[in-house]
Length: 91
Image (cartoon, rainbow, N blue to C red):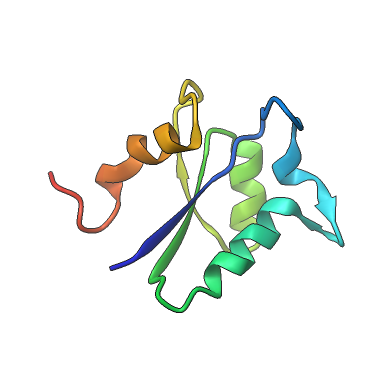
């Protein structure tokens, strides 16, 4: 099973709130999610966030969301923190 994970941090330092900025009538995170859903090899697309605001927006357009710890310093750390919740992970 192939799972694509999209880390989405609201408090980005270079462009704060980037993931919820409107781009052509949709938040940036929705554009990313829609493109990820087009990957034929992907069985599952999961949005990883530490923000209830981002989670609510994402669920509103149909995304599966996993909440992560706000202390995660990077997208890689965000993915590592939820790996046990994904199919094929070791107990």
